[in-house]
Image 1 (cartoon, rainbow, N blue to C red):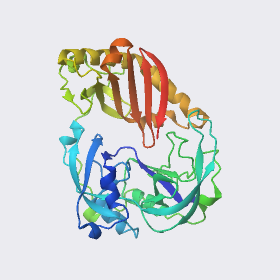
Image 2: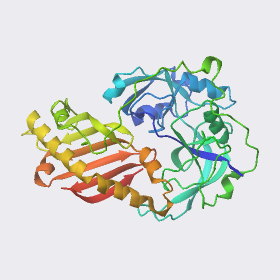
Image 3: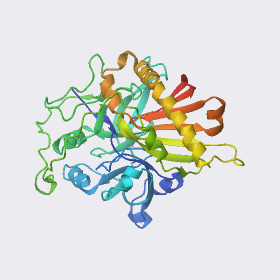
Image 4: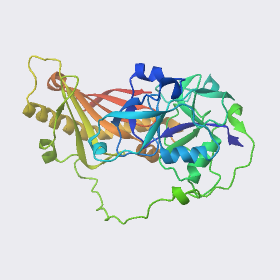
Length: 384
């Protein structure tokens, strides 16, 4: 008994901004119909360039090697477009050379229906998908008629194992999307076939099929033109002291603040120790009073205050995340490793009057947002 259809996610890929009016021009059109006009994209978060981008904002980036590996595996890629990267926000990515990408804009190729499925997470009433027919079988990535998630057939998971694609997340499409934990199918496991559903979960009959699973060794396709380059040895890293402050106070004084579109300041600050799966923290400082803008010294002072509150409040943040996972959280530590792109944000006036500030961190489904007054958590909202 194996799943027919999977949710597809990438927990380590870059994320994009694509203007909706530009994207609409490309939906359900081929490159020939629009004269091979490149799709303009902005990269707004990420830590390293990856072969497969994070499927976010209706666009999935694939590099040329991945495209070849999919096509020779007898899967179709529909709606591939050339792209032009018009802006790269993360400074760490600006220092790296991006792969040669093409953009995949999915078409609706899967019919599904929502079914109520309360899971007691305390944030939303949940549902799972009743999987219908593939309108276009053998398509590697597709949308369904009920939501903007990327779906893939079983064959794509086989490709991911054969070519050792890392950092991906496959979950059965009938497994509720908001049952959000660290669990996903371990498609690179030594034990093969893997566990297709978590223990205690009853698969929906619509997403179950019979069939033999081929014996696939991890990375067995990495030969010839796909063979990896020779490994180079890198110096061993010193163990990280967990008692280190999150940010070196001296580093704050060296932070280069940049003015942003909200008449405020923003910066990306390196961390002394990783925060979830990130080595940097994005800070955004806005202000309402345009007549009395902050000086650079005042901005740095407020940032220091906000960082001190964040460091003090991290146990509350993690306790709330753990509580939100509820009894269905199967592996909390694994879930923490899926979190990335931490961001600290506040308004200058509210920092003086409250202080009020916010923090957010993302995984492949949610942007978890926390609102604080001083060092007390007052609101939590997972935004899908």
